Amino acid sequence: MDPVALSLSDAIEDMGLPVPQIRIGRLYLVHGEFEDDELRESARKVVANEIIEELFLSREFPRSFPDP
Figure 1 (cartoon, rainbow, N blue to C red):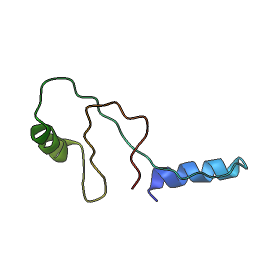
Figure 2: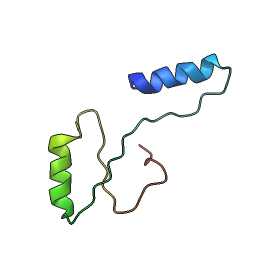
Figure 3: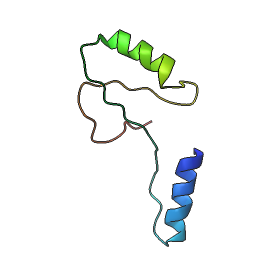
Figure 4: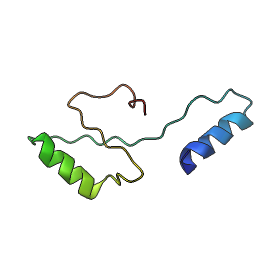
């Protein structure tokens, strides 16, 4: 579990609440006309470290993060 998720888990547990599955994520909304390959390559270079993070591209606004 990453440090932010662990901190959140500890805080929830300290409040005496059951700890759910926790995943931390970032959402970037990009407006414009881009090809998927072009946007994915830009994201890999600028915002995502794919060694420790997953990169998802979607034209729909997500209601939740995908399951691992």
